[in-house]
Length: 110
Length: 110
Image (tube, rainbow over all chains, first blue to last red; front, side, top):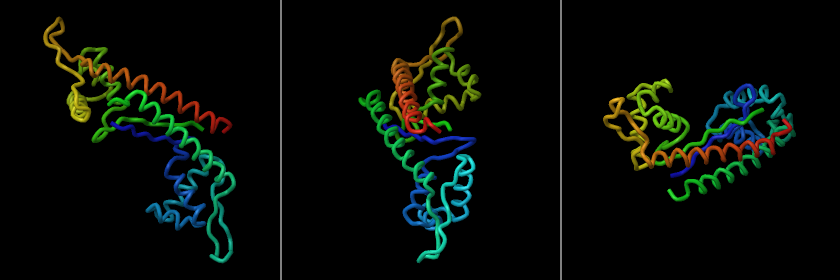
């Protein structure tokens, strides 16, 4: 027997969870919404709409256009976005550890 | 902002979670699979199939027919079923408290 869990943040609808976390992390790493979307099997438009919907729910911007540079521009995660990613990452890690501990405590013998 | 979570037990598929917990609790209270199903807006057949699928995944019986008596029979939760209900109830309570604590810790200011 194993435990499965899903946790997400809600603010007038689904506001943040695993999907947005991976998408934003990918944008931070690649500097490109298009590349990050593609890595997740999403179209650019799907990813763009997802980010915009979440920005409206959260009330702050998550990504911003990065104009110019050697690659001719791209996207980067805003400081507020970076802070959310880090807070969510630690929350998710501690939540997972707490749940695994409690699962073993109660169902460890089965 | 609030947190939403879903936790379930898996054993070759979804084996136990909120739905089965409420259904079994209802059977224990009413002594009737039909009444417990009806309270949850399920048909008798849906509820019966759900219980049987879970019994196969868990490898033990959750309910048994109670023959005779003043009401002419019904269903009752087996001792193994009662034990699972109690273990799940405490696990779920402690998991909820741990997650709320961690959510407040990390997102309390938002």
